[in-house]
Image 1: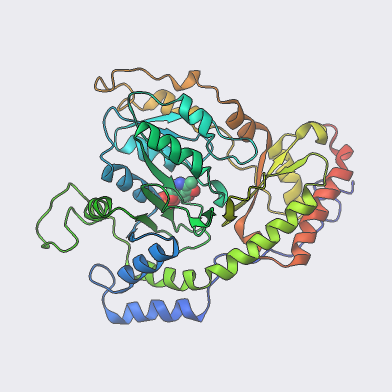
Image 2 (image 1 turned 90 degrees about the vertical axis):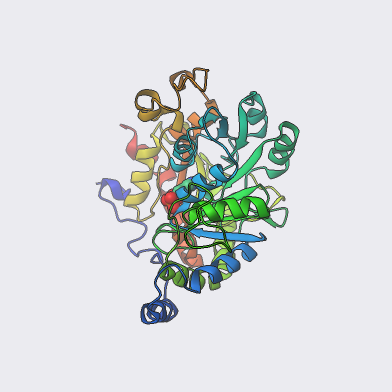
Length: 410
Ligand SMILES: Cc1ncc(COP(=O)(O)O)c(C=O)c1O
């Protein structure tokens, strides 16, 4: 028996971290109110109220509450008129929906690399990938950390491109005191179960552009117009409306959100200070332009060389045995997905595109390093814990570092 819990030793911690989702009497009351009102969907007051509250929260003029973050991305792309033969620049280190949303509108995802010390799109590499077909960039604010919106906005202006911010992990994050989602043309948010603001499923589009708002609104509501007739359809839209139950829960979730962001940021900063001192662990770059970070994920860069070559997936397992829910995170850059290389016929081989793109030939070294070697995460609810909880996390990493020779054989 060794000292490490994975070898039968006593784990650093047996207590669970704070439970997610967080809810109290207010969610029960809000749900009861909708239930008893008899208006559970279209025509209710909760959805417009939440749209207004969330748009304001993100410093945007307009909000459209939809079924999920994927729908928010697809509708945003359609509202910008992006479709057949158009290229959209995306990062490979993200949830798969960022890419499938582009394919859904028959456009071509073109991958640019990320920065190794932020894991967000590298603006220099974005510029390298611009062609005469490029119509938009989708920066992903990964784990809540804003992408470099200064440089990406400059590139978008230079080449006349749209920016659709994938803010599905970044409610309330700020770049130079501006809330993300409202910096580009449109921003897409998710309220899926794991998210820091959740109603189980749900999404939101925000924008400051009236024309894009009207188009996106129409697309989410069967092609109708905001003040138009019920049976007049101007765009080929669908039913992507959020329900009153979701909006009611989200209004309550939003009311306690600032308190949560503050706590997550304090705990993340404490962890940064302690974990960056452990040999073989790097924290993400500090940047004064990131004035607020939602910390959907607390991302760390792990160096296997310092840990006897232990692969990151095994390292995460060792930490989990100590009672710390460390995840190895995204395990392959999205251009390696089998469906892109074998199954997607349209739009990749569409004659309208007229170019051929072989994803199997792509090699973006920083994204590959993040996926295959070093990127590990703690989930957001962990950061809602106490200072003692954070000390347990630090103690567990230190313990593994000190006893790594027990794992020599891996
Ligand atoms: C970066 C990113 N983009 C898009 C999505 C899609 O959101 P949803 O699951 O609500 O469709 C998610 C959600 O997991 C996400 O993390």
